[in-house]
Image (cartoon, rainbow, N blue to C red; front, side, top):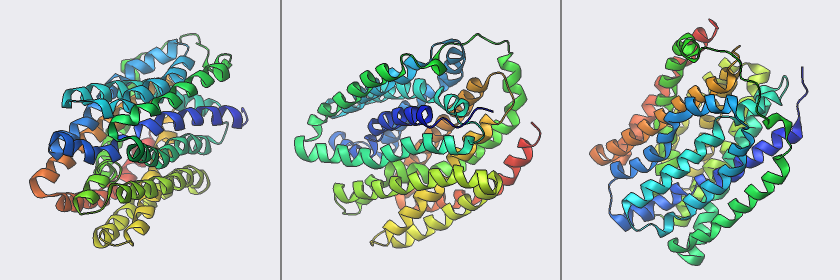
Length: 384
């Protein structure tokens, strides 16, 4: 079996970091955008829905990736996402924001579909570790990105954050010179395979995965998208709210790494059981201490436990024996992004109808319900 290739895994993880720095701009910008345009939480949820809508194209992008020189997906995505997200501050209408977020979402699809398979092919027997390193690239970006955009707002105002796009463009240029001769990104011979049959074969597993993701996504949507809105509505400053997001995302780096590493060592089912239950407990702690500095402790726990599940689920998908691994990954990404979009609307709708505090309680309850689906997930996984 091929050995773990640190350089190749690190290269793709760096690209993931760059791309997701810009993707993380929305959460700290959301309170300002809501205030600027006077929109409701339900309307603001469509920002996330539109950004994730291109995920419906994931299977088609997966098929395209099986037949294409996918290095261009990785090279171009950071600059496209950087431009679209950095122009949000110049948008003067709700529709313009939706358009820019759609472009950013489309770019994210073309980046996220092929890269896990590339990571797998370069991870040898340490697929969990490879997925963790890849996910760490994204999670570390989401810890740093909010601080970067908030600092830019302090310096130039929301209209001046367009200046941040040039780093993403520069990174795409660097990636071109680093990856243009990268053999792992060369188009390969198309293998025969019935995509409908493959989808039908693995449908039971993906259905349970979708249910599990939904049950956890309400909590994840609150902490990653609406946390700044919640804190600013409760009288805290944007810098305080941004710091809270960064604390969450910093510990998400630890959780992402531990999720993959510990699952390789102790078993995926055991780690997923523990992290799912601990997520619900941490949310209870956050609810009780959301108006004190102790809140940051529970945000740290949430960062660790919520994000520990992601590399485990990715690794489970990559374990399937199939001649279309990128297509299977694209199906998983479609489910993940689509379900998360639906969760964003559900949380925003609940926030408007019953108040954000009660919406948080509902999300916490669903986190505990997700615990019961872990066993079902692995029972179905044994069939394949």
